[in-house]
Amino acid sequence: MRRAVITVLGLAGGKVEKDNNELKAINFKSKHDYYFNKKEKLPQYSNTLPLLIDKYQDDYEIIPLYTKEAKLVQSKILIENEDKKSSLSIFDDDKYLIEDENDFVSLLSLIGKTMDSYDRVIVDITHGFRHMPILVTINLIMENIKDIEKIEHIWFAKEIVKADADTKGEYHLIDLKNYLDLASLSFIIKNFKDNYTIASSIKISGERYRELIVHLNFFSKDIMALSFNNLFYNTYPALDKVLLEMKDDDLLKKDLKELQKALKIFEYHKHKRYRLYFRLAKELKEKGYLLQAVALIAEAKGYYVKSSMKSVSSKVRNYFEVIEKKIEDKESFDNYSKYTYYQLNQECKTIYSTNLNKILTNNSFFQKKFKYIRDKDVIKEIKNNITYNHNFKNFIWYDLRNQLVHANSIENIGNVKGEINKEIIEFEKYCIEDNILNYSE
Figure 1 (cartoon, helix red, strand yellow):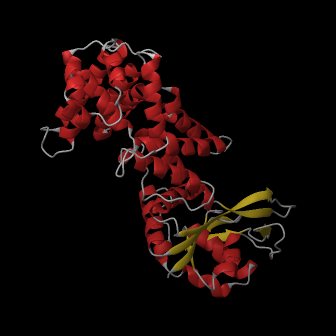
Figure 2 (cartoon, rainbow, N blue to C red):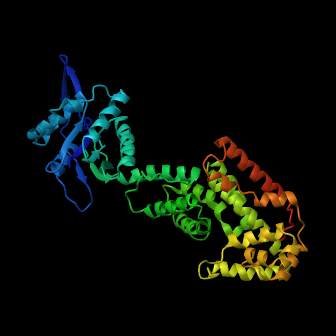
Figure 3 (tube, rainbow, N blue to C red):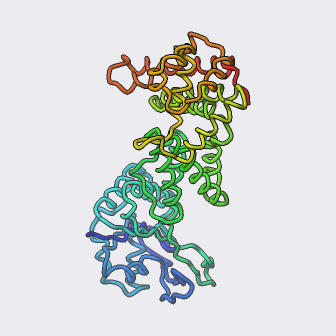
């Protein structure tokens, strides 16, 4: 495994003068205190280059990126200040020479090629001047997205005591690597807020935000798998709890707050299920999740019919609540299956669509269609209080979802969106605006 310490060199407080058309380095004699932590006693150094050589040269290649002026000053420092003439070989390869520090494209290319040559890197951006540390940081952000293991440290000498002619400087070497996670995480949150997905290729190296990434992944998987019950009851509350616990995070406070606000639409307990599904269908359709939007509208139809029937009288409400309790408690209906809202909703749609006389007198039909709602007096109570509409009957049984999941069932994506829009508009008209079944709380 190839390892390197890459450092962007500056003039380290020295100066370069032109004398007889030759460059001459002057004024570089001062040394300063550097430390990684306060308890660690290090020798004094002119700058971070000799420090990095001492610390890493046995296990890493030392790669300086330098201009002609920086090379001149730093070579003099190694010889005259640091007694490291033997280390001058780090300047032997001119491929690390920065010909024009204002040629951003070439400079980024040099940084990228240097990074690509090694499996693991430590980067020092302390002494690069003007825009160079910024360009290095941009490259580090891109590299970290591709491979979070590659960058081991990003050292920066934070000034504690400013050096001048009469004062020895003091510098704390801090590791900026953790801040790369912030760039990645900010992108992840923005992307997730836009489309509820999280790029599997983007990783977070630090422990601090890993729990959030785990719960974002769970949420995304539930959306993709149409696991809405698990989403509402388990995944969303767990994610919301993590976001709430992180509300005081100073670095990502705004991003996290906006994400939490955007996800409030998934708070099931604040809405009737049919209204929640309707709102989510519109949301997911806009984000391009067509199958999920269709599935939600199909489910919303059944929930609206069920809720409306449940509201016709206390007798029906009590009867339905017994069934719903069995669903919530995941009780078994028979040896093979558990109670589900899907089956309950299907039976409610059948009650709406079928002649009462057929339900009461056709025993084979009754046995086949009604697994949960077995009380014919309850069915009569519902039929006597619900107004039948033939167009609405056709609407609640129309299953665009079944068409969408079969190849070539709809000619193109434009038709699919048109059909979904039609479903959403009709649902809003029938169930929200007109409240055709007179649902009441």
